[in-house]
Image (cartoon, rainbow, N blue to C red; front, top):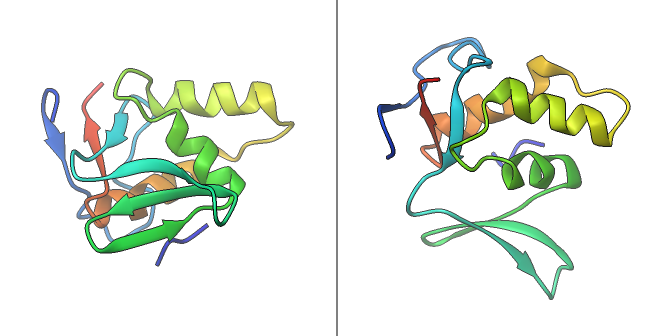
Length: 109
């Protein structure tokens, strides 16, 4: 899916997707972003001022777990318990794209 501060937070400046997100980072939605259910579309959306991003199932599942307490590794583990395979690098790449847009913040783990 490409929808193209507690503690120390940072934005990713890495050129390689996923490079700025480690397994020990604790992602959470930025203060100006909300995850909501759109009754019209019957799916989760990411609400940002003047922007609505329609999420697919995997994007919504990842963001539902981004509470600032769980690490990226814990999120991947939780998703792995729900689904057969969850590629760690794809989760990190997804989060890195959202960090680059400043929709997700990372707290060092």
